[in-house]
Image (cartoon, rainbow, N blue to C red; front, side):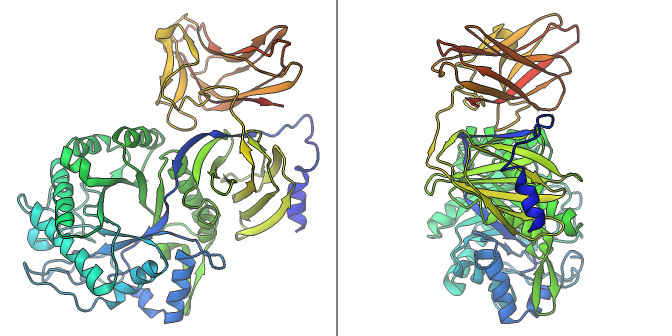
Length: 598
């Protein structure tokens, strides 16, 4: 408790004048995706290994921790269930299986011969999840061996297409039959089904360690369309999602699949994994998903390499990345056993478990992600418009404590701020609450994840219009010259777009907006996230007897801040300008522009 009191001392006292902390600017009027939920997927179910060694009580405790908010439960709402393809008789090469090299039994080991017996060990988890109200998703990694080119469910000889041409409809019928049996015999009525997994990857090869199947975009489109048709014909309510993208860069594959009208109509959700990613590729998924009018899920990621806080921070970074960069509506971890240690009949949560809980317990389904401009650490923020609740989560993955000020002035009637933290010495520890106010300052310990939660009564209309450029247009900003300024998705700080000045050598450019209705004599602060190619750019405010500005330079985003007193007529011009510069291709970008009373 002594540590926490010291941490919060800066909230209730003045910050030293020579050490103003960086600001996290929250803009509740700029909203992104609405959360669908969190989930898990794994392949321990069909060949469960240590899962089978748990007692009934141990299994129920595990399921409660995953799918409920009891105690310190994660409150997951999605269960992805593995429908194992099995393999050809005599094959023994599945090195990724907990139970050895021989694959679990196939559902249809021969054409027309179904094997439903012996599934008890793989049913307890999805049945328990369904009982706890989870959205049920079935996923398939490969068709059965007798539908494949190689006769092996781990892939073709060279990593090319392994579903035999002409077998697409039979494969769709196969998936549909399994879903019907789960529903009618085992009481699991799936909401979604994903029939292919990382299909654009070339690592699915004959004789490898698990089932997998390369599928080109044309064949993928055919599979989606035919499966949707069979499900509807057979009265199975599951809707199709896909394509479980292996690479965030695989947008050409996505466009080709969705270019097929029947496949486009068949796909309910887009799904992408979070292993092979980079900043710019992840940033291109949200506008692509919006263009196609499809919800986006991050459907698989897990860390089986690290332990301790290294692993915990990795999970927190991925959650931040999925929500902030991908704008994914759902996030599903891979193999939840990775965030537990075995302790006899019980499963002991690792620090990674509590790092995940910092998100899943507080940023709940139905909440909406809002703009949170943080150029120092990794902050995501969510509003619950039904309960008038704000949740802010900051990950400090550095080796030093960092002091931040959180600007909540976009909200009215802010209540007391509650907080929880996971760090080297804390596991979802509840911290002392502080009185509600329009801003507060807190110190984030090194290698920690901190969640803040508060209530509010209303949202203030922003003084700057289109301050985050999320309309995809420049207006009411005015760009000068028009051919060197505009809105782009190349280098956004938050959301999908930023404003830019793309200069020619020796030229100058600016983005400006006229703001009226300010209270004469009142103090205001203008803040924006700015970056440049190395040239100097200027953020300024000009008005009647008012002239204030600050300069920025550097290739990573930083907050530029200008304070001023509103003139008698309550009108100012806000501008971001750059140039001239003799460089080959100078540029300057701006995002998350906010003007508020100080």
